[in-house]
Structure formats: structure tokens, C-alpha cells
Image (cartoon, rainbow, N blue to C red; front, top):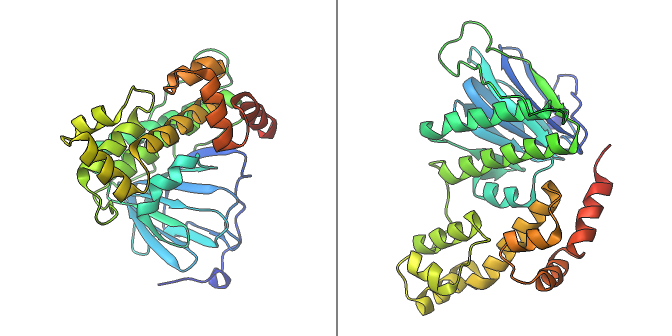
Length: 317
């Protein structure tokens, strides 16, 4: 049933500042609830490992059981709690600003009011997501000295309701640049794996599965020497038929889609590494650093070096 913000009776809970990456895990009993009548400044990602939770954002509600990834966008009143009748709610959570590609991956799962429910994620993928969240928690604590600590899950999942999970209540904030980027990389893998494998994925109507496979191949390795011919061969179509279907169904040509994927890949490398621009150009599939700089500036409004410098200036100390 929809719940309005003015009906939320709990004391409003603050949300982490939007520039931080915060991660934690809880195993809560009935009575636990969080309300933010004005929403949060950052995105909230929740991954349920046991029991059941209920999340409401605006007029949209979703229940979350084991294997469900529920994401709440910022700026919309929300409330979440142990679901009525449930004995517990065990879940990982993370507050952060998403990378640009994540919203595209999540879009097929929107329920309304910026609430995304990625469900159900197959059982065979859940262990990997659990490990990625554990890695996030460990990486967020890394000071930059010595190797990053190993992530340990220690979570019983839904195997029982007696006692909290090992490590219940742990929270970490990624302060350093390296720690922050490592945690975001793990969360990116979580979002990608969940959205790519959830059984409830809604494909846009009328899109040929072969075109989707080619699109996924571009996204998986944008720096590879793809051509219309190689992409067409990979899905058993003639180059002309492939190019026609791709453009007709996705609204842009295969080579334009490849260029966009390469520029996005280069932007991530600029954000997360200190690699020279020339090496980033090569890693993203550009034979000419000059051409890379020109098309990057057209796409992002600044040449690669200035783009990286601008990001570093905006990062919190």
C-alpha cells in the first residue's frame, strides 16, 4: 500500500553526504525502520541475504527477499523496514553516487519514483555478489598502506533466524581515492551482474536477441578491434543485414555504439587510474591519441587531461 511522506511517523534519519561511499551490513529484527521524508542525497543500494524487508519510495513499494537488489534513487521520500510478519531482515547496503552506465543497466527494472527492483537474481550468481559486497567493506577500510585487506562474508544468508550474522552492524566509509574507487568497482560488478542475470529482466520489445548479444559484446570489451564484419559474424548475420537491424532497433549504427562504449570506458579509466592519456587511448581502442582527445572533448566537453583534473578537484578531501 502506498505510504506518503507525511504519514511516516519515525524520526527522520540522516543520509550520508553525496560525495562519500559508505557500505555496511545489518541483520535486523522486527521494529527496525528508517524514514527520510525528504529522501537521500545519494543513491542507496540494498542486497538482501536473508529474511525480508519492505522499501517504499514515494508511492512505490517493493518487498526484498534473499537474492533481491533494490535501489533507491535520491531526492524522493523513502522508508524501509523489516517486512511485516518477517522475523528478520539481513542485508548489505551502500550509499554513493552511481557511475553513468549504472542507470542504463537499472532502467529496465524501474518500478516508479526512482525505485529499482532487480529480482530475482539466480542462486548461482548470489555468492559472487556476496563476495563483492564483502570486498567493498574491506576496500573501504583500506588506508593505502600495504595490500588491501581480504573481504570475508561471514553471513549465514537465510539459513536460520537465530542470532545476527557475523559482522552484523559493520559500517565503513571509503575516504581515500583508491579506497573509494575500489569500492565503486566492486559495486559496479554487483549492479552489472544482477541486472544482466535477473530472471525478471524486461527487454525492449521488438529487439532481436542477436542485436542484444552484439551490443553486450561491445560493452564487455570496447577496446577490442571490433568491426561491423566481426560483430555480424559473431551473431551469424551478414554485415549489411546486421548493420541495418542494429541501427533500426537501437537507434544508432554499430560504429556509433562502439565509439560511445569506448569513450565511456576511457572516462572510467581517467576517473579510476593515473594511466597516461596515451595508454588510456590505446586501452579504449583508439589508434590515435589525437583522434581520441578530439572525440572525447566532443562527448564530455573537455579534453581527457582536463576531465581528469576537474574530477580530482571536485572530490572530497
